[in-house]
Image 1: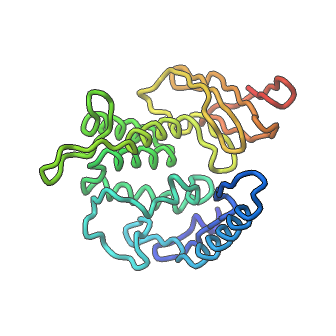
Image 2: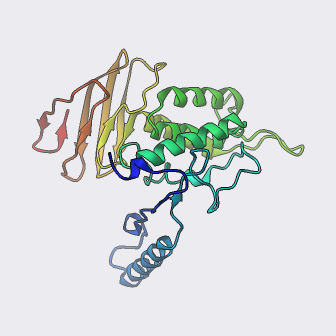
Image 3: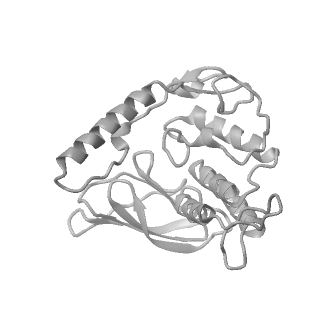
Length: 262
């Protein structure tokens, strides 16, 4: 058992903040712009090092504030303290199990108090649950998003407020598609996980062209809730580690000398 998995309420867990993974774009050959971007990355890394560590609160949740305060609005639509879970990769089931459990507790408290009332917030919840490998919660929150904050043309919207018509929110649509992709493929923990959060309501299907970190493109097929096959193409000629769904094993093959495995 790792030291991190034995964390107790109030213990500090340092943030792993790596600005080398940040992307600052500049035209090829533009030395001045590249130098400026390196300076920004350095400044960002220094700022990150001053951030307070993660802490687990008395409710077993990831603390939202430096002090262990109760929320004024427990069901608030913003869940910014779980940015580390999604879209970042600082919290993971295999890398930081204690923080992953605390993230579950955070989500349970938010939802019990009415969280996810807006389309984009519900989509973010779907992404959180996908990262936590909970396919049933992914499916339930997608169902709620489609039932309550999606128009007949499939545009996501914010519920009416202060007499205004419900505004269209593209982040809800983007978040929903991101959650589906996350339910079918993970690559944020140093390996490619196939069907990590497949809901029972999606027993049979296939997907093509999902992208994984490291320059990989992935096709996956499943039937009756079990992986049937996958093809992984390296766009950069690299190698990867693959995690099969629980109870299954992957037999690797190679096509075109290191470019494709299935």
